Length: 560
Image 1 (tube, one colour):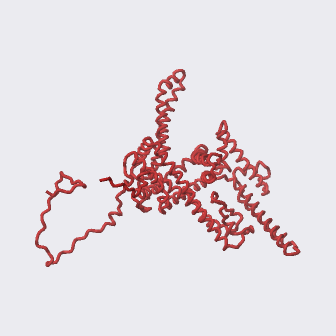
Image 2 (cartoon, rainbow, N blue to C red):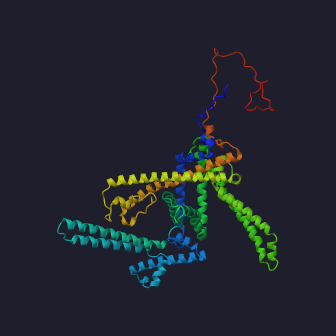
Image 3 (tube, rainbow, N blue to C red):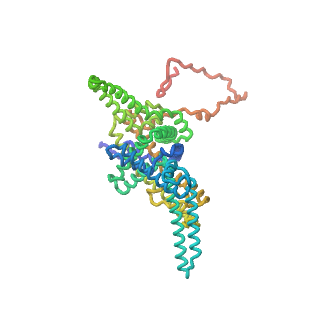
């Protein structure tokens, strides 16, 4: 009898091509609980950065374009010296501009240029200078209104033309006052966090715009912007503002150990069991593992520093006359071995960082297990990890573009329909609504900077609240990116674990929650049987369990 033909009725793509599991990341990432946790984490980091900026002294804040100055100095023969000279020159230009504005106050203590420069370095008389600018603006507006009122147009056409000229002059007066205020306000310096934040956001925008326009290798394109994102901004803060870097990094690690760990935990359970734990349960888990989340990426760096310092201490022997070089040269092989160890640890830390949080979230383990597993998976299957990461990056970029386009459409339609219902004009004669919230210009420039000096008190308050809600909406893009990062890397961790340890994807640590006990039905005594229903026959005796024998769950018990 001929063999019956085999009919393929379906293909399990996730089993046949495991990398397709990464395409679940979008569905996992857009879950509201993960977005909410990521958004709260972003807001806490932003608030913490702004608080640090407020506590920092003005003279230690950034000058305008400081990161660009730092980036340009990297090409010089002596980058540190070139940066300091360029930064001092930029600061001096700001001081000279402010000193020039102080000359308008006509104070006796500001008669000479030297006095004004000295006051400018400390940012003195700022309140009086701002009041002077507002008074000058008021006088200019009154003069423009008087000139318009005294005009004698002969017909409607001339009257309309005079009205347009008047409105244009009012707008120019407001714009000039706003520009002057920005110039004098720069004397306070720019917050280090907001400087870094704006630079990193600009690099992300360049990456997305480069992908859209096909600009991959040219300056400002995808590759250079990605490199700048991870190197220029953080290295500037580390090398030029070390104390600030340390304090901000501590705050960053604490926030993301709690909220990032919670996102990773929800993603771990979601991916393995297709179940969604609550935000409270996720935060409880991350809080219990907060030290593990914090120290997982730090411990390898500490090892590198310790080994490096040991090599440095031994190298001090080389300063001993005559015999020093011999003491360094003979055991130099040990220094090379130390360099080999530091290189392995550094590569493992950088390449395995993305797996550390998922390890703790999936296994419920500690920092040492996270380091051990991430290093093991990297060196056991490096190219598999590279492939999974590349798929996640491409897929993540596409989904990020989709989310960004969605938010852009939300903002654009909201702005358009509100604009239809607001006919009022601002004090600057511009449309009130576009003054409070300029329309999003394009997909790459969603943030905006409202000019509060061009509005009265009521308009400023309204504009502040509009900006608050708009920026919370824009922050959802960043929250999605963070949620996708943890979701995708959690899936990659599951795939790497199955590849190296042969562990199934649905194996995840689940802690025994107190709620499980509290929600159990209470045990109550059975009601007494009525005499008529009582069974006088005693129950048969049950065999007592034998302590030395255990019943396997996959075999029937033997009562004999």
